[in-house]
Image 1 (cartoon, rainbow, N blue to C red):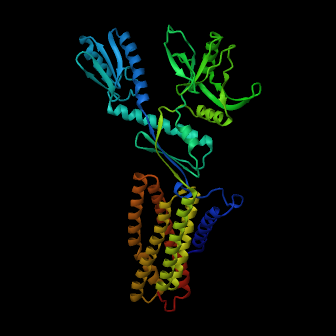
Image 2: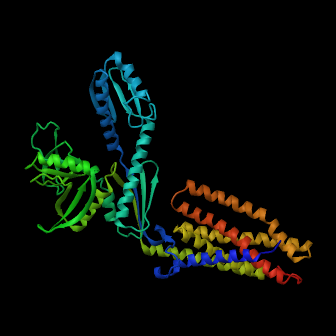
Image 3: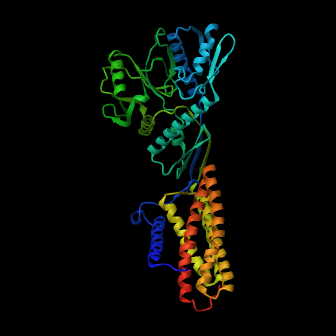
Length: 517
C-alpha cells in the first residue's frame, strides 16, 4: 500500500541528508568539508596534457634472443651436441647442427619440460618457432611468444611510467593501456608537458663500466659519447653494476665542491660487487652510463665498500632531481616514443564547463516548467525529486572521487531525462487507475505498482548498454557510462522512495478530496 513507516521515512531522510553533505564538498573550502573528498575534473574540463606513448619492443626482442643464444650454447654443450655458426639476424637465431642431431634439437624446443625454453616454460612451443632451413636451423619468437613478451613489456612500462609521474606529484593522472604496445597518459591541470616528456622519453638504463682503451679486453670494448656530445671514451663491455642494484637515489649539494650531485645507495649484492670491483681497480676510471651515454667517469681513489656513492656531472638542481627520480623509479623495459600529444588550455576547459552547465540549466528549467504545468502539485513533487536525484548522483560521484569529463556531464543531463520519463509513466498510469477506482490511495498505489515493470525494463536495458560501454569503451566513453549507470540507480531510488513518499503524504491528507493530476 501507499504507506511509509516512521523508520522508513527516517531511513530515506538520512540517506538524502548524507548525500547532500557529501555533494556539498565540491562547493566548500577544504577546511569546511564534511569529508576530504570531491569530484575531480577531467582533462577536457580543467585543461592539461595528453600523451600517447608507443613502446619500441625491438631492443627487448633482440635482448631476449641474445640471452637465448647463450642458453642454446650451454644447453647443447652439456648434451654433447655440437652446434656452429650461431648468429642473430633479423630477429632470428640461426645456427648449424649436424643432420643426425637435427630432430633431437627440434624436439627439445617443443618439449614443455626442456630447459631450453625458460622464458615461458608453461607453454610448450608457444614461445619459439623453429624451422629447418636445410643447412641450418632458424629460431624466432612465435606469434604467441611475441604477444606475451609485448604484454609483459607493456605492464612493466605502465608501472614505471606511473612511478615517475607519481614522484613528480601530478594531480590525478590517468594512465591506461592502449592495445599491446601503447600507453596513454592524461595529466589534468598540467599546461607545460616538456618536463614530463623528457622524463618519459628516457629509458633510464643505468650501468657502471670501466673505461678501457685496451682492445685486448677479454669482454670487448665499445666507444660511447659523453652526455655533453663532445667527448668520447672506450669502455669495457663488462657491466660491473646495473640500476637493478640501486635502492635509492637523491639530489644533494656537495659541500666541498659546491656542486649538485646525485647520491645513491646500493643493495647488499650491489655493495659487495662494487666493493670488490673498486678494491682491485684503484686508479681506473669508472664510467657511469645512462641510456648509452657517459654522464660521469670518476677515478677510483679507494675501495668503496659502504654501498654508497655519488654521481657528478655539472647538474643543476632540477636535472639532478630528475635523474634521481629516474633512477629510483627504475629502467623502462624498452624505449617509449611519443606518437601523439595534445594540450588543452584551462580556458577551453572552462568553456566546456560553462557550456555543459548552461545546457543542464536550460534543460532542467524546461523540464520543471513542463512537469509543473502538466501535473500541477505532482509536477512540483517530481521537480523536488529531480533536484534530489541530481544531488544524490553528485554525492555518489564525490564519494568515489570520480573524474568528471564532458561526456560525463552529458550522462548527467541524460539522467535528468530518464528521471522525468519514469515520473511521466507513473503519473499517466495513475490517471488510468483514477478512472476506474474511486479510492485515491488504492489508485495511486496501483499506479506506482503497475508502472514498475515498464520503468524497470527501460532502466535495465539502459544499464546493460552503459555496462557494455564501460567495459568495451575507453576514456570519455567510460566517463559517460559511469555517470549514466549511477544515474539509473539514483533515479530508481528517488522515484520509488522520495517521490513516492511525498506523494503518499499528499494523498493521505487529501484522500477524501478530488485530486487533480
